[in-house]
Image (cartoon, rainbow, N blue to C red; front, side, top):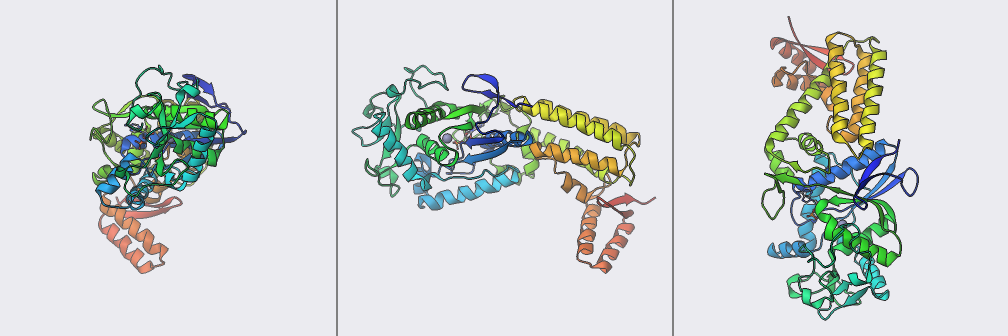
Length: 475
Ligand code: AMP
Ligand code: ZN
């Protein structure tokens, strides 16, 4: 079935058709590595992860590119304030970013190109714009894009061209530009930049932020590709400027589908570094929350709606995920037998269809989760009626694994490998079971037996099931 997505270009839902059948090329604006990314940023990266996983679920082979902005005003300012070389300063935040991606089970992009490693490609593109007479060098030695030379400017943001531009990534010195809307392609070096500079046909300096994404997307995805995404605040001026530069330089359409994610807010205000109302992943992990809980809380609201964040939403995520895992453990512990197999197949097929349809409908997470919760309910009532045996359980658990191809938070296998007897099995007992499993793995039979005796003393028997060992209360 066709996947429908809301294209910011026309402000409407459209069927997604990729340029090359079965392949989707996706460019996602990445972090500026001057600090730890906050969970507002990660809401955006999670939306992109869900988009990518949903396309994969629907049979596309996705090539995703995400840039790392490792040179701009902020990275230069803060590396200098810390007396560090720019590359050493940004390296720490690149590393942290990848750690956070893994904690959130965000699938890795095919490539994470770094701006500082692609300066020649940017210079090349700026040169093309100069040759075409669309860019000009001003008295301040910086090179600007002349929006007067690109009449389609404003097509994405649908902005009034006379209005004042916003955003601090425009070279501040407005007077040196022909028009207030013109933006910097190459920023001439000044002493605030310290030793950060590259040679260019226009003198030493560094690239503007917008040209980065144009040069790197062209290199890795081609002149025209399928999808480009980012947070809603990136739509203007960043994405508008990307369109202008790429279409003017390449002489063809840049991107077919633009998708934008709404903000994560705190007390209804955008979460941002400048307001100080942010949490990093590290803040939340230090409070004892897990990556899965954070992921669950951040993906649960449709990407085009604002999501107001509070810690309570992580507690709710914890409860929700715990319920899933208890259910998985119950299923995994069902006795051998093929009872309920037909019913399990029917339930799984229906749930899968509803789930797939939901994500094909502009990533409708609420509908997708409703299909999963309905599946839970049917299984719970089946369990209460003693309908299922281990063969049925396998089918049902496989369906949860299938949901997790998009949701990425359920982690069926982690839940069934521990296989707690129930929610109220003491931690001490679970720990001993894990130790016994490890001892058995190491063929340390005497220790395994000793642990079994310890468990017995605590009132628990160990039952080895095909899904792993399970604790059962004695008597
Ligand atoms: P930056 O590092 O500031 O360029 O931001 C990286 C990405 O996170 C961009 O796509 C932003 O649009 C997005 N972003 C920033 N703040 C938020 C927020 N509060 N909610 C959702 N996305 C955000
Ligand atoms: Zn970008």
